Image (cartoon, rainbow, N blue to C red; front, side, top):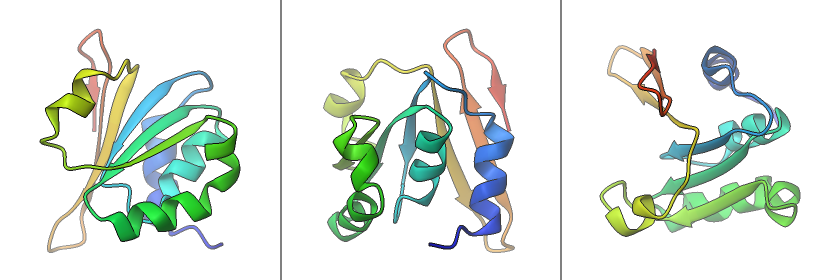
Amino acid sequence: MAVPERLAWAVDTLGVQAGERILEIGCGRGVAVELACDAGATVTAIDRSATMIEAARQRNAHHVAAGRAILRTAALTDADLLGRLRLDGFATEVLTGGDTLLCVRARPEGQVSA
């Protein structure tokens, strides 16, 4: 399946590394999940749409089966889900009306890259 240039750029910019545990917020169809898992990370991905999570699950079936992708239908405000995660960082992307893409990564030691 084709990978949108903006998502390839986002994952590359975030510098996902093998062995990292990443949270993707609003994973949609799971394209970035696939890229991060392919780079060796374990990704917990949430989206509030069950339809999008199912699409992400289908796209990433091999990563789900291997335990590298954990996909959940949840809103960011689901504190119970977020409180149980052990993460090395998180990643999200934001599209504004002008098609600007913002990638944010926070690490436990307080570093944030955008």
